[in-house]
Amino acid sequence: MKSYPECIACMFKQAVDTTRIITSDRAVRERVLRELAHRMDTVSLDKPPAISSRIVYDIITEITGEKDPYREKKKITNREALQLLPDLEKTVLASSDPLRAAVHLAVAGNVIDFGAGHSFDIKKDIGEIMKKPFTIDDIEKFERDLSPGKTLLYMGDNSGEIVLDTLMVKEILKRGTDVIFVVKSGPIINDATMEDAEAAGLTSLVKVIETGSDDMGINWERCSEELRSRFEKADIIISKGQANFETLSERKENIYFLLKAKCSSIAEELGVKPMDMVFLKNKANL
Amino acid sequence: MKSYPECIACMFKQAVDTTRIITSDRAVRERVLRELAHRMDTVSLDKPPAISSRIVYDIITEITGEKDPYREKKKITNREALQLLPDLEKTVLASSDPLRAAVHLAVAGNVIDFGAGHSFDIKKDIGEIMKKPFTIDDIEKFERDLSPGKTLLYMGDNSGEIVLDTLMVKEILKRGTDVIFVVKSGPIINDATMEDAEAAGLTSLVKVIETGSDDMGINWERCSEELRSRFEKADIIISKGQANFETLSERKENIYFLLKAKCSSIAEELGVKPMDMVFLKNKANL
Image (cartoon, rainbow over all chains, first blue to last red; front, side, top):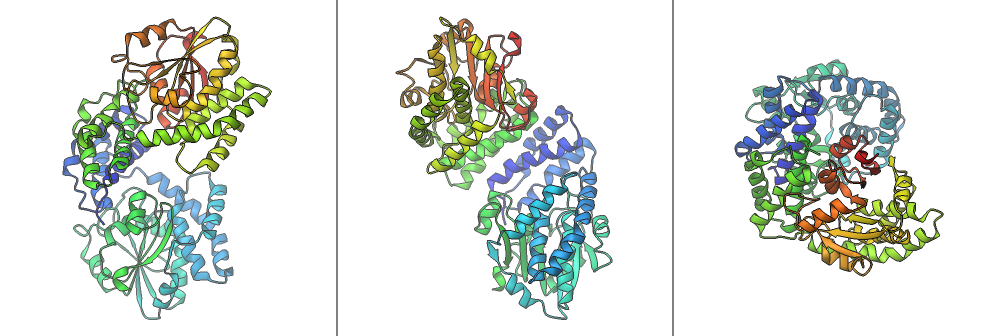
């Protein structure tokens, strides 16, 4: 998808929110925002938001020297999600429809901000998400697609979230379909990297590969040949979260988009309301 | 107060949100945002947010030709608030502390977005606001200040909201204190003008004057001599909402700031949490 004008406003918000994590110095935050304004003419809205907004994080690194502002937050979110995992796994296994329960928990992982000390709220939030139906619900098509001998490429999104993804991965493996999990090659916001995949226990469960770059979603100009090849060959692809949707929405492969529409632009693109949950089979394959 | 770096991000959000009211044309929204980026070097954070963000509305008018994008919304909010007024007035009169009830309803007016067709939610919201205590509560000091023969300058904020202000104005008048109500001289966002004061019934209740400009809050470089003089001479001043607080917070007069802290910057400035309600006597007079 292309960027919306609203994405420009969001870029300034991302810039100030992320810089605030690094420093309480207002002058630095102002410098980042002014630099972003200066360089706005280099930003084209013809690219997906995930790609056009990369400049935000490049400027932050240039000005503050910090390449991984979400480092600590990522560790905390993994830890908190791992504490919840045993109970959540019991919920899946006890469910009358374990795959659906696992899909629900996988999108819950995309929704919840695993902040330190909010364990109680997380449990409550997960409970509410489990009750909320998907606005676009292609889970049955997905289940029919999962035949033995197929290969599924699972495009991960955030740290913390990937811990909950393991429950969905296990359900897919039970159906005889191989899974290859994809993480980023370097830090970008709170996106999961190989370190997170190890913490989540994914590396001992399935093959985990990297995108080849530290971009949000997939930057087709910077990703590795391996990622490109595995993407084209996969029988089924799961695309978690907004940035993956933004960069994969025009692809023709057999992709299932699993996300919560967290902003008005993504909601408009999907034809749903903001905050709606979506499990959408790529229309190119209907 | 001075602007925060966060105010820059907020300016881009205000720009896109307001332009969307005027047009569904994405190219126009993009043009407004890019023009704002181009002119960001002319924006100084040494001024209050209400003053530094005026450029947003100037650019929108230049590019779209629309001087009053909130015209219809303002009429609707006045109408909806007027429908609720008789019931709310009964609530005040039946209260054991009518002044406190009226102050609560006046801040409720600052909180609620009187959108068309949301009457039921407005009633519910008002009920909840009435129950929520003020984080800073100088109502008792205010009541002691209201002695007969004094003059109070009431700095109004938004349309719709000023309908609920009439209840507080009536309680002040009952205590023998004269009220002069202040509205803007021209349209700026959804701020109340003389037309709104007439619709709210304020003009038949008290003297209503204009600020002399179409700025948010008070722009001391552009306001009228009359406003300046009445402001300095008033025994008591009520300052409603964020923009008035931003532009009056460094004044030495006997001001009571009545607002909900709707953003993190205002909350930080006031030493409260975002969404807290405040009724603060100017510290210069303590």
